[in-house]
Length: 362
Image (cartoon, rainbow, N blue to C red; front, side, top):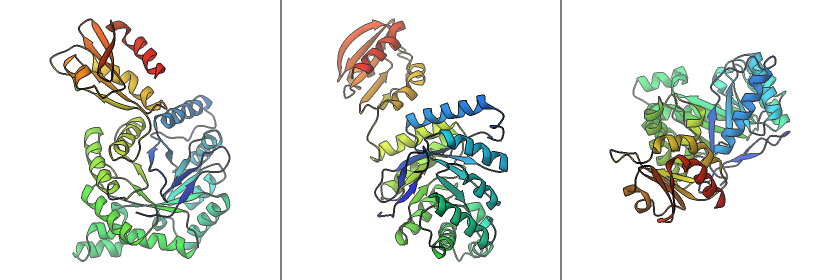
């Protein structure tokens, strides 16, 4: 779908990310811990900065932080002062927290106008964002629909998907009335069908960029399934400009999931593509531990290649023949192969060392 462009970042050292308007679909995640104590805990601040850099190297474009109080707002400002990652402040209920975050180098504010209060409160946030070149994301969840729409849904006059879409339209109209166009819309449900339908409804009529997400998707496996179905359906229809895979798991796993979904949908072609076998009774090479050690490093590499990690010679050069580089096990030995041809046979204990030499040579 042809959506307008919204720009995140651009202030200070924050790198700029464009959402919509034909820009590449971006990957987001959400920070998983409190940031209330950063003014007195420099060690934690340094760790957060390192982890943000690691997330960026893995393919993450944007990170959102919950800001439930003033200390969190101040903590986010400290992080944003030193991170090049575009950071989003997630605000509920208290518009003054958004204003506090705008004192720092945040790239966007996430609010639900319906719980911020009066139009004057919203206006204060909008004017602050306008002045600082900061974007806004309207966040609508199925659990926070207006009372009148909830009643119409209960009466069978509207589907929940239509209710989500109508809520987004109402909330967006507030920004339109204030002549503020730098906003992204998200409508999320924990139900895959509802998520798909409400985004379809909205995309048919409006050209605002859409942030896709299945809210409260669940633990790793279930959440991956829900998000993969919803995102692939919508992305293949040209709907969606940025995604966040919501998992009861680590931010790293959310990013890995998002990047791989985009790759499989043909929306992200750069970077290492990793294929690996599930392992079976033909135990040869410890695929699982090798992938665990190398997965993040491979995704962080700026190489447009395919890497295969296979458990035995059956799945090695044969099924992995398309790989630019592959490794497989043969008892106490391991083989290195390129495009299906064995180029080295090594001791299994040297697998990591030799693999690093080969990947660096490509």
